[in-house]
Length: 93
Image 1: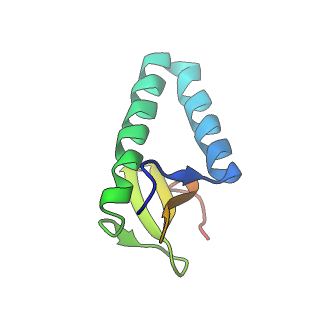
Image 2: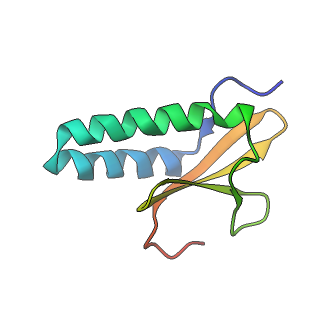
């Protein structure tokens, strides 16, 4: 049975921290709201792991969280692994 919450790689955690810090520098309330949105959206992934588009790397999927941010994740037998949280202008992979 999939885990209740997705696992995050160290890189994905670093991406999240950097994005939230960047937003919080101008608007702490917006940063908090965006973080809440990310948590809500990622917590739903184990229930619908294939709901989002196929990723650019084999075995991955991509969720557009915001026009500027893409969450890259991998569905696994034991749950979801969040690989990266990237700005959409970034060259990926």
